[in-house]
Length: 234
Image 1 (cartoon, rainbow, N blue to C red):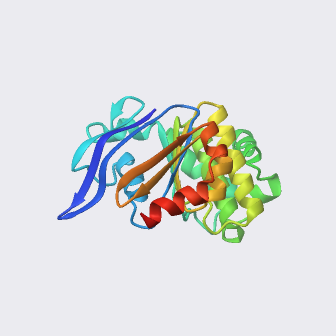
Image 2 (image 1 turned 180 degrees about the vertical axis):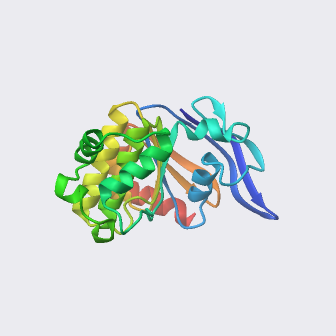
Image 3 (image 1 turned 135 degrees about the vertical axis):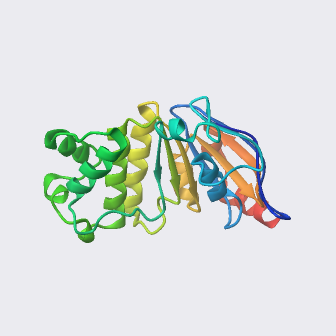
């Protein structure tokens, strides 16, 4: 569903991403770990076609992102570190607006409320102004937009940054439920606990390169913190 082949991004003499290969299937939750400047956000931005690759290719659902940017956006939903919504509108009104933009038509109130409930926002929260929402609640609205759009892939940049442990656990549960429906999830994080508890696959990045990749049972059997620090110190 999400594929990078020899993906490279250079800015002059600086290489932000160096020959990255990724193949993320539907149902995968792939967490990219790494220090600031490791290339994690660059990877997300290349999948979103916010920037163009210097070399290599990036595909969503078998379609080249650079050649067909509009078509690939139909299959993907993006949740940035800070979700921007209209504060004077309610959560439900924001969902109606953004889901309408994604779909090209408005959904009925009953469907919108069902989506809000699915992501853990009750009817009282749905009618509350977003200016009164926590970060976790704002993220849930954006997950609801992805559900309305029936996105096949989710791209997330530091989604648990600033969340309390309860909100982070709720968010991880939402990602697992999305993956259970066959959605491919690519997320960046500094949160080793979140990665170990949520991911089906983990990659560690350093200076633009993928230096370690763990799959399935390896994640639970590995002292992820020790492995991560080992790479950072090397």
